Image (cartoon, rainbow, N blue to C red):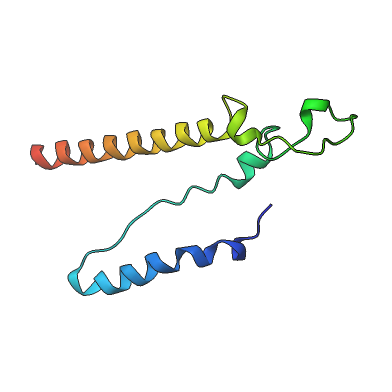
Length: 102
């Protein structure tokens, strides 16, 4: 598991941008989807030697399963991202409908 301190510094540019825009009353909103736990639980979520099985010798060159074993981890990330887009679009449409009926 990756500790939160290892990646939260990556959000700093977004915080700075949000502060700069605060005088315009425009807040920067974004969703953060941490896929670390989900990815770590998949056999193909990391470089591995499962081609030879768990009891086999480690090969000289490891397989990059996140890119070559399809469907794989990036496909799962894409499905989650697509679901977030659909959810956001649905909420936006619902808000517009509610606004026009009032």
